Length: 553
Image (cartoon, rainbow, N blue to C red; front, side, top):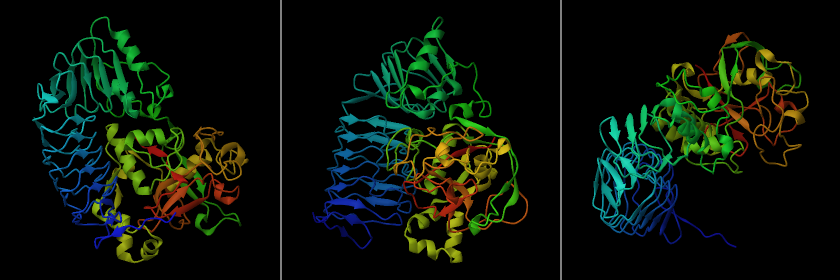
């Protein structure tokens, strides 16, 4: 069947042939006049268009689809038309400069996290349905709809039984008596909350920065919809009625959303703490299954005759102590942190793939924030836009010019030498861990001289990824250090220096980032060995590359 042609205007924006659907805008776009014929803005149409600052939606548009303006960081003004009916979930999520928006009197439905940065909102009388909590950062809400009500500085359903979002400006809040359920992310800035006896269900998606939760009765159900439900009893002081301690120990241990399965709960009992734990005291390695790696010195690279020039010469390197993920990051964890799954092959226990190096940097920062750590990376989104706007091979070759190489190098910088938050492994850390650290037996591959024992590769993978941890681990207990998916590293790709180094981080700039570990498509030759490495442009993603997290405390 012949593929229908699209229409592309002078700004490079792609529309359907009849111009009624806006399909995609280039990420480098700085301004856009949407065609008057447009009726629908398609999913992710302006995603990460970080240079655009204002947008006018024409009068024929009835629906703004999911992720339509996701992470448009500089978007400050949006004019929505009369006639707009639906704003789908995550439509303006991550638009951190968009603090005000006027909803037209025709809007009937607002999706979850659709307006998460908006500080002030008026809900028009036409609104009939609000999914989840679209206003997670909102500080002032005026309601004109009969389908909702304002009680004690909080937005409720009309019957006052379900709390949607609390915009109380203080730190200590008592939820109104009669409240029966609480939606996810209902509390954005509160430190202490009191839960009434009437509460029956609480959907927990995000609890930081809560410091104290007081239960006045026994809540029937607590559903965790986030990977960080483990932090729920660890970050807060929990106060329960006399005689209800064992009940809450039980409910906090067994309540889990079905989509993630019971295996997502810790094997140890959940403890209710009596005080707030500092980041260094939280059991982060256990929660995320991180393995401690004792630092030491080793011979990095290879001097074998068959070795390619980019892993020569062998040279002495010393690394400090660090933690590293026992497994590659799974799709389950990525989805729960980033709220989407980019992988080509879907499966919660499969390694995440189809993620660029820049995607992995954002993931590490998001993970750090959720656990109360300072992010390891500073991202200059104006420079990043220039990189993401040129994803073709021509740009990679053009990067030889000093100006473009400098732009690429300065888009992301490391803070505090990577100490205190989650990050990617350096090239040296990755090889040291793959070799087994101080426990190394000198294997050819990560954990064995027989690739079949430790890796999914071209000879046994059936050309697909497999659940993590299904092959034998290496000496440190790390799985999939060879095969399954490759892992992005922090370093720019460049020649090794022929003298001893301590904690090297690679060249100061370059065109490609280091990739380690080979994938399910590799052959049992040198590319699968512990010294092997390759390189890819940081803006590219494919089904063979994922990541493994590192933490330095």
